Image (cartoon, rainbow, N blue to C red; front, side, top):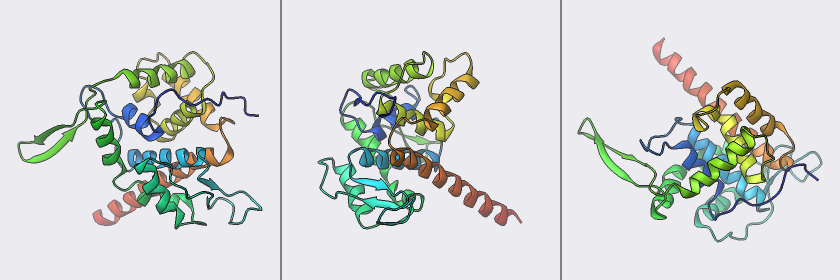
Length: 238
């Protein structure tokens, strides 16, 4: 059995919703990191959620599909519209490499997550214009009680060394993959130690192999996207 405490986090939020709350500044309503990282991280969070629910898996050696590829275990709806939309998409992609699906998996996901949080009264959709011309929406906190609980759980693990629940460990692993832990836990005295602790959790036996693999696939997709963007930029300037 894993050494980590396998208890569900208190509350009815999805992992992707908790992640979005952490990645948006409460005051400015702006994200602390940009695309494609933020979007792929949300997609990774959904993949993790579906894996924890037993809907999908990442194949290992000897499975019916090639190791490292997507396995679809159960297409029965979860009852959550956001998850079910992504589950239906993944159901048609068995045997695919998860990192190759991350772009479509995360398509429009950020807007859906933020809108849901606003509808719940957790965030506020603050619409305005940049330079008086270009429409923009900020997402400042409206009711930060749930986010405060999530942050307290993160800080207990990262700063005090307590053992994380599976969901808290998933959030830490996603934040570590994005390299934004110090942007989320901003009052840490030793940022190097903070990042090291987060990395240790991300690489430890905090969940089933498939769940940890989902984080790795998200990170691989982000890295690949950055490489493509950098190559395109270099070609354009030559």
